[in-house]
Length: 575
Image (cartoon, rainbow, N blue to C red; front, top):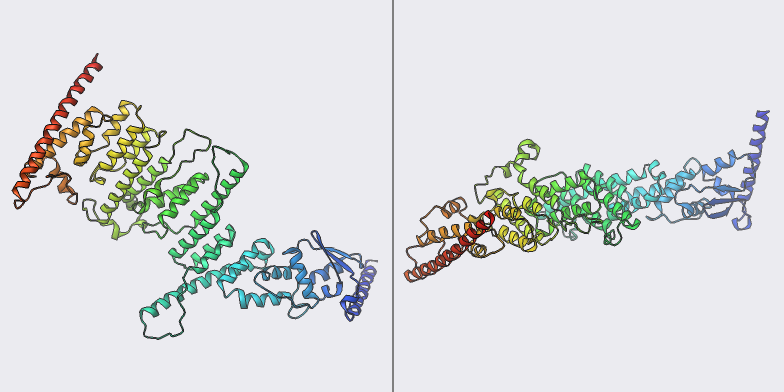
């Protein structure tokens, strides 16, 4: 019984195919449609024979259908939707369709879905799209990126037919070939023995990297991983990352958190920021003290990571990268706003991150001993005792940067003294040749925070090395009522020694002689503060000595007043 039914079905199919053949000889416009293809909300009234002659899927669906007179089919799963099917249907009818960069991906996926292969007819849609990919798309980076972008909405078929991987590999291979060609071209310019009259102006080697910004995050990550594995230069990868990050984060700006805290919009924007930043950090080149990644870019990533509550590992990675090249930073790079959502009394800046960053820089020597992979002999062979060494130069830059940062954050009324003191005490003694910058920062902090405890005020001022203050700073400190009396006395004491040393012709090495021998590049400040040459004009020397004596007299009067105040304060405390 079953075999007879199979024969009947086979006979019916033969009759149906013979009818299609008869219809094929008639003009399409004169034949009424016998099948309706539904794709989502769209429907197409078509004819079975042109479709089955080129589409294996439609042929199989008609053969497998129990009802040979089936008149409606649903193909909603076709990649590319109604647009792709309409082009494929026209191709089935023999209408010449134009294959372009904008439609080749969906036509290739639609051809796979509809099974439009050479098995049914030569030069079928699959073969036509493959030829276009090989001739026009894959050899060109820009075309490959454009078609890859179109594949984003064609998953999973674009992955099943390996189209995505082929495009990514083509981009990576062509990028590295172009990098090699660019290097050879530069060699030709350096050795102009071979004349090349028709040479065009050199194209920037990173021109194609900008077009990667159209890709979604997943495809971008895969492309960048591929070009890194093929050997693309680190500086090129950095440029691509910077460009993509800039374009991706544009517009993802969280509004004032104090006004719309917890809104769904801001939470969604924050999530997008977090995903992008964490992905970009994972793609950064290997950490190095000579990184090709600009400090400004690392700083902006860290600021966004903090604002979007990125993972701890992401933030730690960025902090270490910034710490490794901290001597290249400017104030703007380390002014990192604190993530204080819902907290109107929070500090303006994230001092904890900065504390870790500066600690990383200061601990580079220890890290280098523990991790030989990070060790660069050309950098590590210097001694901090040599003022002209790169290492000493770097730490001096960092010390100035920290003092400038302290002066900036001192204006924050919500900043705790303990946070400020922790940063002020961070640098070792040899890091500061002159303490004027730190003194200025402490003075600003005391002015903005007049009600701090005496113990905190004393500890804060203890961070300043009075021996490293310039004459101008000493004069200011001696009359600064915000400072503890002990510090004012100490300043006057050291200033007297300085003046006595200057009047004696610089031969007294009790105080500044020791410092100047350790740091000979430090310029003396104030008139007559250095050794006076015998060739100098005698009248000029006498005039300077008179001025110094007057200054000493003024300092003694100020010291006497301070000592009286100190005695009276001590008596009041004893009572």
